[in-house]
Image (cartoon, rainbow, N blue to C red; front, side, top):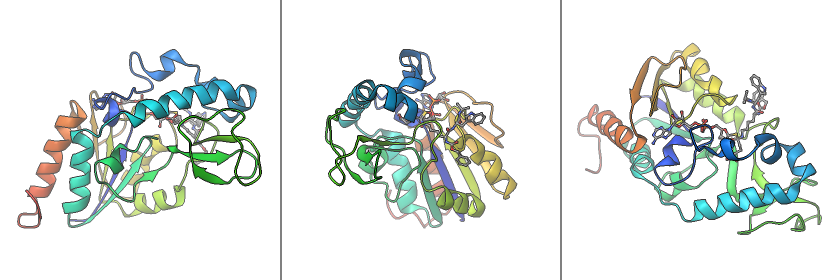
Length: 235
Ligand code: BJW
């Protein structure tokens, strides 16, 4: 028992048909990240950025949670200790699988944010440069954390990393900070660290399980729940 902190990345949604960023055929092989994932890119060409995120929103709307998302929801529900779920993903597949209180540190496709007054509201299916902020009539942007911006809920994340007995990174290449630094932070605080990935990212983990998330996470969750016999509430 204890506190498990799980960090997920694009790899967990890959088997749901959502592309990763840095794999072969990943999004950053087709788009220039400085054009679509920075505030400067948005101010320079808001139409391009809206088209990029409108397409991502449409893809995500058609995607279904996979066995990996469902296994993590089962862990959150049945594990007797605390499970803190942090995702870098902007889709809602963890929630679709039944997870609650997910920390979306890089924002969500379902949200809109005013670039002028900071108001937030549910994103329409399609946003355009002309989409007005309902509060101040200013410029609407996707509620996504771009390069150079501060990820969300960092205080809560660092509190969780300080409490962690086990830190697990799933399907993330460990190239984007601050998320890439969580493993070192958790280890420094005394947590055991585990990576689950198709292939090792090269990060400083104590243990690594390789293979597709849908299979490896389901097996790992089974093992975690069977370590505390009699405490699992559902088969
Ligand atoms: C599978 C699988 C399967 C595939 N099963 N696995 C120099 C040094 C250090 C830092 C910086 C620096 N220069 C600039 C920075 C900071 C910058 C940064 O880190 N840059 C690096 C590129 C160097 N970071 C920032 O600007 C962040 N803000 C910030 O730092 O604020 C200051 C701060 C200071 C101190 C404390 C706190 C804050 C903001 C970063 C915003 C990232 N935004 C993006 C795009 C927006 C979201 C979106 O459009 O979706 O977020 S970039 C993109 O990368 C996206 C992702 O969330 C993020 C991480 O990607 P992820 O998830 O790891 O995906 P991939 O594709 O890289 O990897 C997929 C993995 O899955 C692979 O490992 C596969 O093997 C695996 N896989 N199939 C299991 N079936």
